[in-house]
Image (cartoon, rainbow, N blue to C red):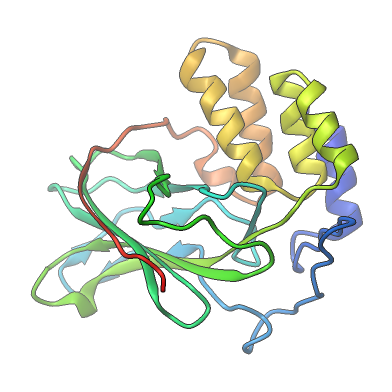
Length: 244
């Protein structure tokens, strides 16, 4: 389903450089890797750090440039959790451009490996993402709560973009799998991931969706985790912080 479209997208914009999406309402500036303009980050978390031994790396399901483009005011983020010998605490934090903490939540894994998602909850105390602004996200596995320097983490950026009228109308009229095509062709990989993950949760035995998922992750250079299961992790504590 995605292969022709994805190959075309890769040739056009390249996964090794920053994705550029232009709409009538928003024109994103061209950014390069490195430096302040590059919005540095890391989508791969190291294997061994202090008391943390991971047989596989922690991975954020994002483009190689570490920037998530989304149309959502309250986006979802996807991560691959590697297997661990014992349950581990996991922390997710979202900050604005001035390093003000907007949202923080803690999870506890049971040691199982798989792809999980973290949602920015729609609450009055948490404002929607503003259009065109860069927000920094971070997810870490806490190996020792008293030695946070041993955390293993991934981090990057998210930016909300506004779709033009034609694109919005096209999405409204499209069927679910067609919507995924529209998202990928627009560089909105995170929205594509969420829509496809949602369909897979609803139809876990549909091999077409499983193949679509593998192709989508492969297009992001994440072939190594394309066959990993989708898992749910219970949120145990959340600390929303209002922006002034």
